[in-house]
Image (cartoon, rainbow, N blue to C red; front, side, top):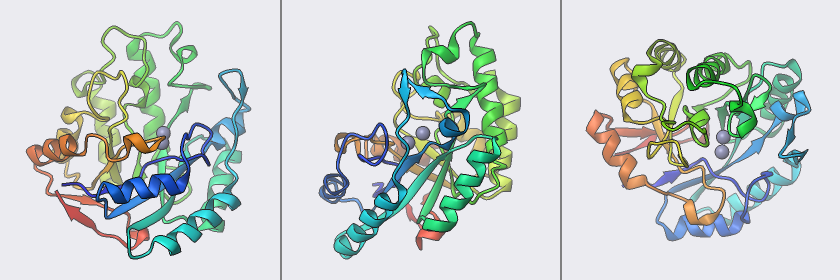
Length: 274
Ligand SMILES: [Zn+2]
Ligand SMILES: [Zn+2]
């Protein structure tokens, strides 16, 4: 049974819907041994002055986040290993990259999840990104951005939700399949292995056409290419989804041949058996 979930959001994130203490209590009630919040740092939006659904993105108050998280970390020691992480949304603009590097240095988060939300100047979750683009065009653009994100000049541990572009895509068949994007996916997976990063299996798939991101065909290929570092993530934005589909992920990973989950070394963790 999987007993970790390090990709979650609370009120400190623009789209978080729950208080940190409630989230920690829920993680304890689920029997998790290791739980983390990975609040959004949306410097991709900041660097490009992108609005979100017609309003300005609320950037994180990082001082407030880390001071509360460190306080709760001390309070809950002995009950659960609570970690304070970040989700950095990659952008190639120097402004974003400098701010991420600065935040990593200043706050020393327990771990950093590197993700791609935007490419071609838009968030690949919202309909505006897909307007006028075929699935091949949209997904290829997204995957090239993921490849580029692996070269981020700031430290990170985990590669987030590969297939994010399919979460809310308007296509009749939105699923991101290995066979349709084999070349670029191979480049991405090889680079993750080469850089010794942890590949996330994210169960916030929404309408992606698969139960988690990336799906088993891509995870299988990662394993074939020598990738062994995987982690479970619910990407919960409220307490209801913490640990969501962990049995399913555990079974799928074991079937492929993975034997353990890898937790970020910076968090003083190694991993757990599947
Ligand atoms: Zn994300
Ligand atoms: Zn997230």
